[in-house]
Image 1 (tube, rainbow, N blue to C red):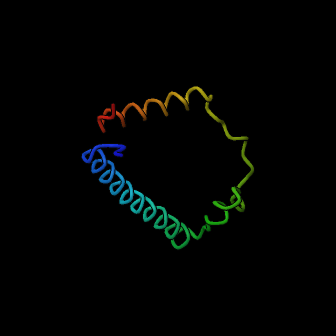
Image 2: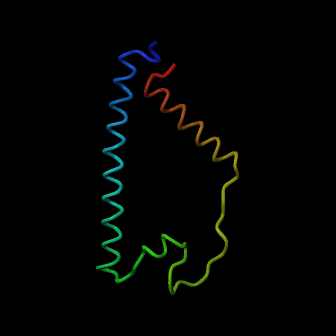
Length: 89
C-alpha cells in the first residue's frame, strides 16, 4: 500500500534535509551569540534561558500576548504559503 507517490516522498525528503540544515545553522548562530555575550559583554545568558530571569535586570511588566485569533491567523497563513510552495493538494 502506497501512502504517497514517489515524487511526493522525494519532495518531502528534500524538505526534511533542508530543514535539518537550517536547524543546524540556527543552532550555530544561537551558540555563537551565547559565546559572544559571555566573552565580549561579560553576561551569562544561559541561566536566564533556563529560569527566565536575568540577574541584575530590573523587574519588568508582565509580557504582552497577542490574541489567540491573530496567532491562529498567522499559523493558517504560514500553512497556506507552505501548501502553495510545496503544491500540496
